[in-house]
Length: 501
Ligand SMILES: Cc1cc2nc3c(=O)[nH]c(=O)nc-3n(C[C@H](O)[C@H](O)[C@H](O)COP(=O)(O)OP(=O)(O)OC[C@H]3O[C@@H](n4cnc5c(N)ncnc54)[C@H](O)[C@@H]3O)c2cc1C
Image (cartoon, rainbow, N blue to C red; front, side, top):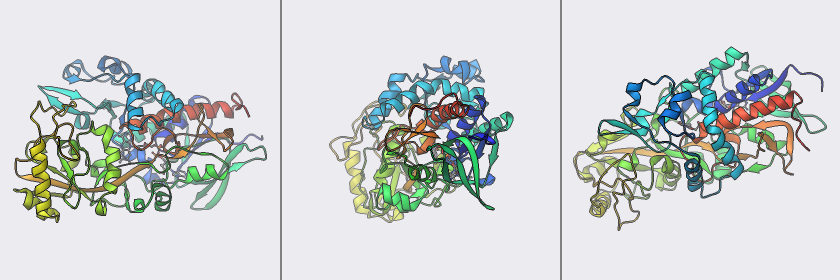
């Protein structure tokens, strides 16, 4: 092979790609990052996130060592920050995916989560506890819950800025407005670069290895219908409009094997007024994640999920799909004065679809649903609520039973007016199906062989998430698999790691 200008081309400039680029550079590679979006739209879905990470740790003292290094003792004294061990991470992932998550990928993700968070910190990403969204104040202390306890300073936008800053410091070249269109391959089947499309047309750029980290197909309505099913073309997209499945398609075109849950995706309750794609100012605040504190009804005034089935982090994704299955993809979340003060920040933005009324019938009229139907639902629910020790920071077992569906936790009657409702639809976050990788991030072909020179990381890798997803795992998986793909791509490019054929 003649010596190309770059050892490694990384396709995409979201979290997974930037981690891959930094790791490849650390391992000695000359790296080019190609990003389809313009500089003004940079950061991919990662930009739109809260920047929350799920990782293995043994509690606050452990995390303060090399992650929350800026935290003062006075702040630490006011926090109850439960550990998150390997077994708990594994069981959570397997519980929500019904045991379908690929054992090898799950093991790599979990075992590398702790060192990778420290690596991010070492590379300049700063973190803070996720006070606003993952803690409740109980008796003067912030109790963290649900397994996602830290976020990047500045959320996803902050995360992307930190990573881009690091790329600049270590000399990584980034081209914006440069979308990879096709993979180049030689007669031995080795990937030798990419064809790029920019404003000036097409250009072939050679490299010894390519890392695909350019997202799933959530922003491609044709692929959504083809793989997720009828109606998904109508879902709103929560993040970037640029994740149109290009990386997956390019790899399939040269014989990569499809892997994972192609009919599944991450989707959530999303304000019905939200635009078709993510808004770079509102970010993830169109989401409405406080439904465990109230009830959710469809346009017929009927409940359709157990809002208190588990912590929000473990149900919000499958409930996005449940809303998709309701008439007109419409739902209303209803709260009363006992809980409305506990709603997350995202309920207080000005772009919110909110109605309020002194009676349930009045609320129904404002929601344009049948007042009798809603009053019947609320009365049945209130009558089913059993007394108990209400505590929103734990699975408190305060349940509404004898109705269908039940509410398994946090079931307070909705009887303290004024009543407040928020109208939501489904917002799609990212797709679960994608490419199959080996332990080094090498993309697998239809004969279960590694395609030489081709690596992948992030959303476009299949096999980790099936049907549901534990919150905070997307960024962690992007970082873990991105870092690994970058390192191995660099080693491969430097001739240290030719894959067995
Ligand atoms: C609103 C929202 C909130 C979220 N909150 C969280 C959270 O708090 N915690 C968490 O863990 N996860 C969260 N997620 C999920 C998380 O965003 C993803 O799991 C993760 O960011 C995916 O990273 P990625 O690098 O694979 O993809 P992305 O960050 O989407 O990056 C892909 C990049 O590839 C580029 N691209 C696409 N096609 C091409 C092409 N042909 N050539 C070149 N470039 C291309 C895109 O423009 C994009 O910049 C959230 C997602 C959204 C949308």
